Image (cartoon, rainbow, N blue to C red; front, top):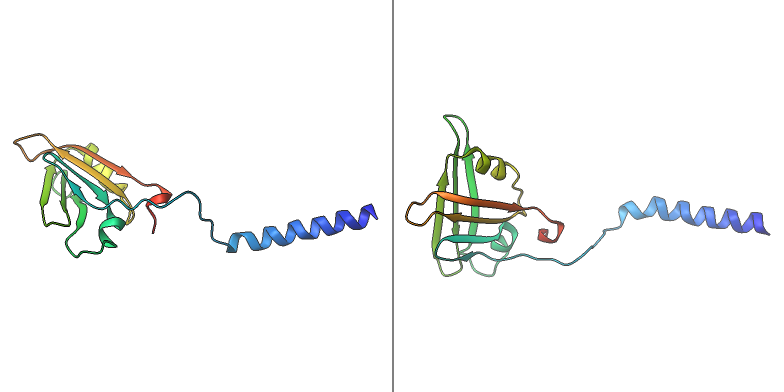
Amino acid sequence: MTKRLHKLIGTALLGLACVSPCLPAWAAGVSLPQVAIGPYAASGSMAGARYSADNQQYIGCVSSNTNGVFVYCTAQDNAGKFFSCVSSESRHLTAVKAMTDFSNISFSVTPGTGLCNGLTIDNYSYHLK
C-alpha cells in the first residue's frame, strides 16, 4: 500500500511539474502610473501612458553615443503639458539603456537650465500590462 501511495504522489508531482510552466503566474498587483508633470520633474510608466484613455500622454527618452553622449527625455501629460530635459552624462545614458517598454520613468531638471539632473528607470513586474 505504501509503495502504491508513493508512486501516486510521485506521478502527481511530475504532472504538476510538467504543467506549471504553461500556467501564467500573476504575482503582486499592477501599477501603471500615468504621466505626471511638476515644475521641475516628470514621471510615469510607458505602459500607463500607452494604455491611458486619452491620446495625449507619452513619456520616454532617446539616446546616442555616436558623437559623445546625448540623452533627451520628454513627457506629455493628459492635459497636453510638455516637459523635457537633455544630458551629456554617461550615467544618464546607462539609465536609458536599461529602459524597456514597461519601464516607469522619472526625470528632473536643474531649475532654469533644461539639463537633466536625475533620471530613474524602474523595471518591476507590476509595471507589466
